[in-house]
Length: 535
Image (spheres, rainbow, N blue to C red):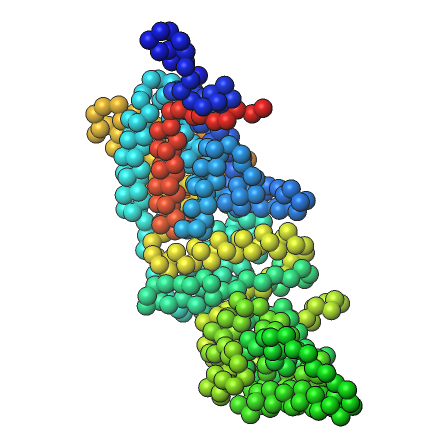
């Protein structure tokens, strides 16, 4: 750290405890920041595309995650470096906003920084580089808009949506049954979508998983799945045309708020007390019967006596159902959640066509299916798989597919995948670079080079010759002026992404470019890093 001297030549300290802080400034700071961000991007580079590899991460308490999803890898990796954390934030914001493309956005940012490093070595000012990148990203986003296609779909024709979801799922571990999963995801989104408002509430889609069975057994339930069983083993396992009372009050005698002591000195007094209690229960159960309920779903527990009474009065019941599930059941069945027995009325009951309990395999696990609901706006995707990690990874993949379907309903423009959109943007940006006088032109060209890194990584991961493949596709695009030639990852024998049905959402791609550029600008603008040094 620099010392300062007063007029008598005595040194004095500006920063507190400066001997314990390390400081990087100027070009060194930028270089170290860029190398940190590049290191993070390099980790994700190998998991891009349909032939991308998975990462296995172990958390401090020994839990293992195997995943291909960029956002999850970075979340679990526990990055310590300040700039590395920026990359984690970057993929997280892509995940929140779009849901898909979390790996690509980090790879893109890493490539931009790599190009920026070369320009810095030539002595170009970081701000000029950042401005050039900003201009280039504008050109690229506008160009994407112009090469995008509108995708027409309707409630009856969902094939286009399924094709796009299959593109998302093809880079995941579940790609062997991507067709089934894509159809499930699209049907789930279409069930809860509001097509007039072009809006989808993903909270209404519940994703449940249970170990066992095989991935092909994954199913979509037009209703709610609750991981509970009937409170008494002898209650009926199947109820047709159920009227459901949804309660948040316990089947227990009321407890006084203050502390009381009841002295019982004769048997008669005890009898009266017991009868009083029994009358409470009788009234409760009778109230439920009177309004016409055929199934009680309760958030709290029951006394054994209440359970016994319910059983005798032929009123099946489910207890200890969580709050979120209660809300979903209320939405699906059109019922109201009732906080007190006194308020139960026939209007507040939910309706379901079929409530059944289903047990799995040889285990004692049972689940409750509530189907054919009055309002089928709440659906459940039920995932089966060989082990817990597989199910967790399938959940993440399904989440990506749901997000893609939602984005397409919001904005039905698509661009072609397989790196074709990036190559097309790269050519457009390269062509536009000559129009800009000044140093920015270098940065714009560098942006065009960085765009090539995504198709390069795709080719590399697919075991093709990266440079050969890229230049072949580029020349093909330049020659035919079509933007749908991409990298043939699955070795189908054609570069035409329309034939391979590889599509990506336009807003997803645009978001990737904009977010990556913003983060790179931010990293380039840092020229002084003061950090507490390690002891």
